[in-house]
Image 1: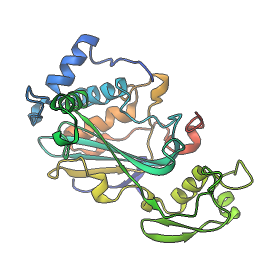
Image 2 (image 1 turned 120 degrees about the horizontal axis):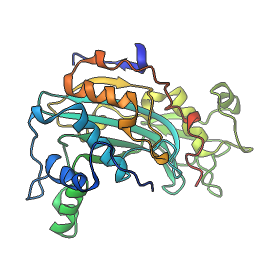
Image 3 (image 1 turned 90 degrees about the vertical axis):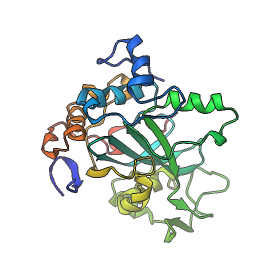
Image 4 (image 1 turned 180 degrees about the horizontal axis):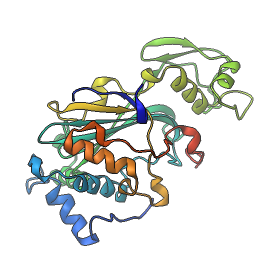
Length: 291
């Protein structure tokens, strides 16, 4: 484990506005500067067009459109998160993984957010009713994509009468591995104070994240599902200082994301040296999942 939450590296809503762009320019930036062409496709931006400010413009714009993760999302109980950076001389990408439980979705899931100068594996035109709908998707999401995965499988571990509660006994499947439902004592050891007589689904998710983190977060292929294959993963963070998006804080407001933008553009990992307090553990976001 290295400093600043760095796990590994290789040689490689809310209404708000970006401090980098006036409102009118934001639309122009998202359509032209972000690589959306007149035919709805995406151009590869020249490497010289990338600056830390342009990276932050993308991230801030995604906050404006509510496509940047809020760790206190009222509809999702946060259990685990991870951030990674990917780059080449021509392009950059940032991936944020969020594992948690949404009662509305009725099942735990892994949400993989991708942001970048150019994205891979976009939704296809045939997935939409009309060509105009597909074009609207591309124009509305020029630099961001979301994909969902389900690391938890199996039946019988959720109470049939109280589906937000874990069964009294049973087996839960995590990435195809059968695991007996944890004893109550395991929750306390992991620092999870049970709110009811039996564990809630979100509490089980948090325990699984504490004991089997790599199983509930993305595999290498899931992490890169929207990242162009020629980009190299250069940085993986297990913890960092995340902006309080719902309160109006933008990525560009934080030293952490300003330095991550510098790393993406330069490829120099020493640019990430922030002393901001890490806050991505679910304990820091008690409002998550409470709506």
